[in-house]
Amino acid sequence: MKYYIADAFTDKIFSGNPAGVCILDSELPAEAMQKIAFENNLSETAFVRRTGDVFSLRWFTPGFEIDLCGHATLAAAHIVMEQLERDMETVRFETVSGEIAVSRKDGLYEMSFPLRKPKKIEVTERISAALGFAPREIYSDRDLYAVMDSEAQVKSYVPDYEKLSSLDEWMGIAVTAKGESCDFVSRFFCPELKLEDPVTGSSHSSLVPLWSEKTGKKEFTAKQLSRRGGTLFCKLCDNSVMISGRAALYLEGEILL
Image (tube, rainbow, N blue to C red; front, top):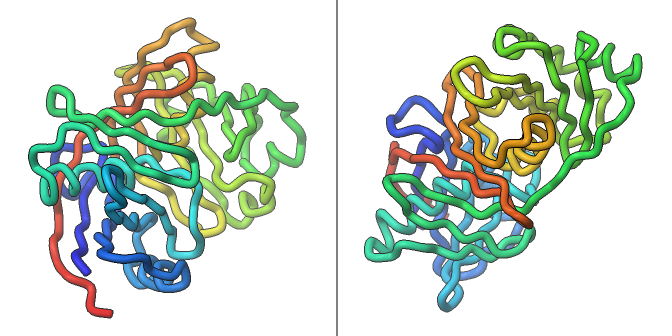
């Protein structure tokens, strides 16, 4: 099986968010895909298989299959259009979250992601205790979004994964604030895996409408302030969020099954 690692939301290796991309010639049982993702031990491994004019796409963390992943989609599009189909300008992926189209535009890969408007909820003592601070506001969707006072607070935040794991109603925990050198910043934590995700495209399906409501803007430059860091160019549309970024190939090889 052909296997690649690409760093997403960056134009150089050793930054952005690395994702594994496996190219399937035929269907593979979910159990086998999960074992491969566990062996790869990256935050996400994408499994891509051509089905006619489109490609099937599934995403696995080392522990479970996920319903939406931005950086692994970007990495998969980069591999398809740079390694498999070099004349292709738009690739369409069939996923559990619906069809996702990715197009090459001006050196960027532009992804059409589902719009997921988060709901504002009450800031409770339980949530504040788990986060380790009292946020200005809290929003809920697949993940929990905690609004902080400044970019500096987001950058210096130190998570306690044991406490964050008590917030098991949500898959991930994001902290966000208005940016200084961009429109907004964020960081994203996965309590179950006890790690910080370097750049999380899927969280911007919710962060973009959240910040659009606050600012009245439709287009954003966003930065994720992890150690590796990454930049996302986002636009709010009627029923979708357009998320764009670059990618860099790090590794090409084979998996022997």
